[in-house]
Image (cartoon, rainbow, N blue to C red; front, side):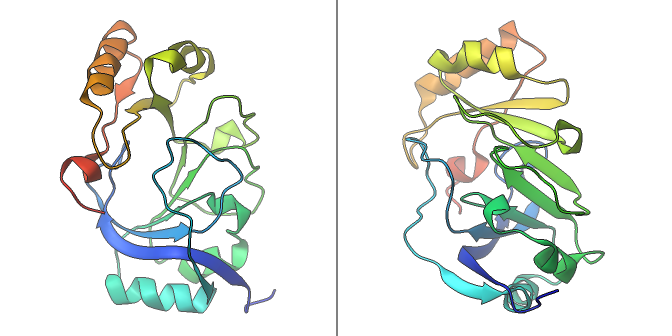
Length: 197
């Protein structure tokens, strides 16, 4: 196993999970650079990165908090996440993965939680049995797509915003949509509401 694999990391930071089941939970985020999709509403800048080894990532994560859960996010983490990096943290921390679901999760990973945020028009290739929650982007024109693709595990809708600015009109429409379909849960972007990363 190559322990000197390097990863393109956009940023590593300590904050609160902003969406879904773990909203409000302190986590360390390892945000990978690069994605296989180009979503018009993406609010993750993909303009710079650092090449880091698994050990360097581990050391920086530990310097922020030695025990907080870790969230691998992106971009699209499954373009880079591998067993070498997972083994750096295995058994030491709760590991959360956020993915768009268009790539298979084939590694023998022990993950605490898997969130899939599907995007319209994209085929899901992840094993649905490994998914803990789905988080669909929401605006009214996506309602039919959401209903067609929702699954029986926890399913959230997350209103699409205008960059860092909350689109309250879209939020209120999302509330109405959830009331019509109570199997769905509303997930606002807490980090944007309270002005944190």
